[in-house]
Image (cartoon, rainbow, N blue to C red; front, side, top):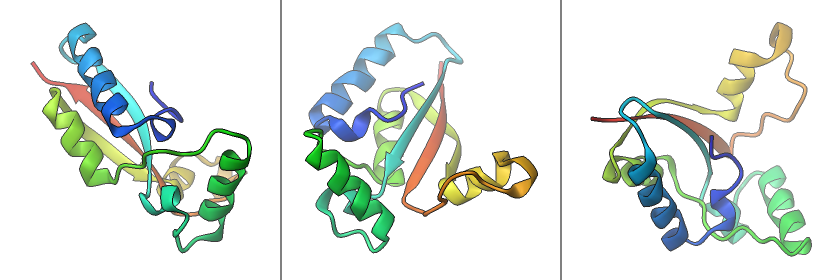
Length: 120
């Protein structure tokens, strides 16, 4: 599980971490990771929640550095021997897992989660 980490890293650090995972993984290993829309880092996302969250973490001294699109993250995972099995964005995750279909959080559509499996 690698959730809430990559946005604070540079692209180089993300690629190095994924390469390190490659050396430790067993066939069939699963990796769950998240990604945000690239506009969250630049502060130009059309959703106010994305802009507010980016501003908040920046004020706390932990600015987001990198947000990979689904396509970019998929390519990065493929490059180190992982294949994406599932992808869902926040609205879809809320539909899947919210009790009685009533999410307890905002379901703004600017984040996604990938489930990837290590290939032989």
